[in-house]
Image 1 (tube, rainbow, N blue to C red):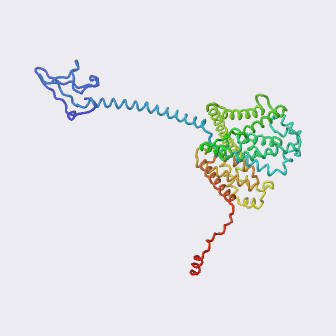
Image 2 (cartoon, rainbow, N blue to C red):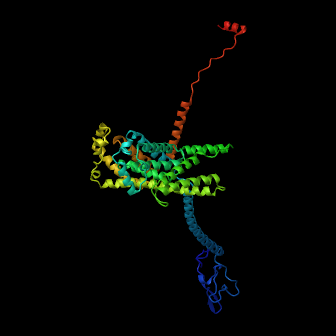
Image 3 (cartoon, rainbow, N blue to C red):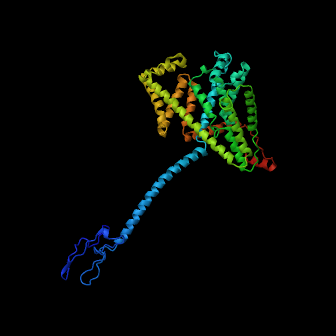
Length: 502
């Protein structure tokens, strides 16, 4: 019998039937003797026809009448399984393609991390501004002509390493004062987000001009600002929390109301003035580099890209050129943001692994010694209080190494990353107060801000906007003198009524 199914009489053995002079036995069915549409009836071994019963008896009936339909169902089931397998493999390939297409669309279609890049812009511009304001009384000794690193030594160094500094264009206090004021102004405007594309370039010029003038005056925080000032030029850091964003929002709302919005005149004027200054410096040979390569190519390239951006938005007959420029700008921004994140991870990883090799960090006493140095003890009483506990020193020493080494490996776990990020920000805040290194700590906190969650930054922005609105409402509120109440005119009837009431 076939293995597709069994009837109620399948377990009964067929009995031999005698007919005439010889015995007739039905041939047992064989699977290879039956086609796909076989009914399971016994057939003859030679002809394949159904065997007959005794003398003129009709052919035997099939054992299971539903075997044919079961075979078709099984064939259909096998076909469905094969089709499902093909669809599953297609779905897997389609899912990978869809994920890849979504990633490419996201990287090219938008500038990722707008709040993080805005915090980096505000943090580094504010840190550099505070440093310049604090060192204003000592500016000439640090970076000016009265410093120990003289103008001749700086000129020899610049000629060998080809670094850029505008302070090498002239030797004198007047030019130094102009460059220093220019650095302060560019920091303020970048922090506020006014013309961020242009101000990011001018901010970089100010940072490089001062730091490359006296390279021995910097520390770790200055190195971080030096690098981040270059990276900020490549980011679209004015998308949120900037005057540019507020100007665009107001123009958009005005267009939605049907009001006429005039063309931008401040941007082209600023671009023209800076082009003239760049041309004068190039013709005077003040900027190092050739037509391809060097700072001359960098500055002229940035100036040309800015002009191309304005021309595409102003005179473009279609939106395609502006869309292409947006795609390129998004790619450059996302790449620069990734480099900033990689730079922060590299700083912590190298610092942690170098600490592991030190014997003082291994025995847990490394934090104790800086607390007793006069240069790093602005609050001696606080330093003595913290260093009095050996367990606290051991915990801080090992905790610092663990956090710095483990942080790059926790970026894909949001909760653990946020905990370590809060620990590092707290550590830098303590360093700023206890060791007297505020600008180094501010620079590192600004670099750590690239890993802050977007939801947290939006919440902080909402709090800041609410506080700003409350402050402006208090400042704009004017005191009004209450006017005297107008009494109704007295009439004889009113006077008589008043007299009766009293």
